[in-house]
Image (tube, rainbow over all chains, first blue to last red):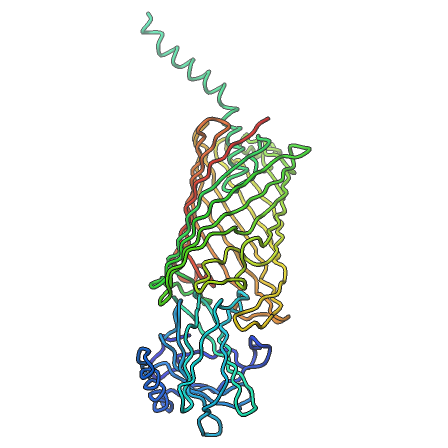
Length: 169
Length: 325
């Protein structure tokens, strides 16, 4: 992701949101990031991630996004930030209608659209409770542009987030 | 008296040597230049070749989609490739077939991931190449148009996905990915012009189509993927020093056109890769045994290349046995 920006600017770039089809063949939809407004929730996610044994997440680089049809909202934080070649983690807090989504089924798939391949290992997603989730073992095996498709199912509803990663090194 | 004849004898010997050797130098020049840096390709004056090449690749950085170059700080990417190759002229000296099969040893190490090393076959190739026009190799005389014509060698090459494809990987680092995953068919032409008896310039251009295939990721979602076509251009300068030695400088550019996934163009999937290199050829015993060393690298200059995940340097050492029948 374009993580070389100022702390209050967009750190993860959600480019081409209205033009590109996602890896699962549907139109992704994003809410542009508002890092300043999101700091409180970001800090909460960071605390949750730190509490579960991972390295503490700095609040920088976190952002809000809406799922494709707007069913869910989430605040995401990457570790490391920016994402790098190798193993990465992603913390996120799921919300719906202002409340936390505590019982979601979540799957992630990293995909490199320009090369037509993903990672060989599926990331592991852990429900940390209180609407917080952590995905680990997100293997990004080379620098370049990656899409991370996050499928969320909860309360009989299903929707997608598609995040753009620009892995520099 | 005897001492006084020494310079004359030396001069006669030198003249005799030049007269006798000149055609052989030309022959070597033509064989070297018309097969320069292309493993398995039979030189102009040979009937066949068996070759093996040992290559080492190491990545030092990458070029992002916008052309920004960044070093690889926390990653180690190294390949050792042993390539077996053979070429043979069939039916007529103007036509040859050739093939290559790489055997790869790959090491990958990334941040937070244990180092992995895997061995396997890469993608095999088979080609057909012809000589349509011969260069007289007499230098260029603008008063004689025939001397201006270069060697013209069209070719077609097929590549089979015999190496493990990215979507078939079982390793976290994808160290076991040895191939492209797609069948490919390329066609092009090589022009080689001897500007003088010992100096040649060469231009090689080709267009390679990579066929669509099904790919899937860790989640098992299948997609129909058409990798972008590849346009390759290579420019080379070859200088023949003597019967045994020659060297060349070359530059290559590969443009990869946009890929398509599920029928949709993948934005930002095009790439460009510029490499520079040099090679030295030495006949251990002329004309049978030939040793060729080459190095090539991606200049670490932003905007020169773009969309290249791994950019670095390559060193190869080739040994080949030429057959004249």
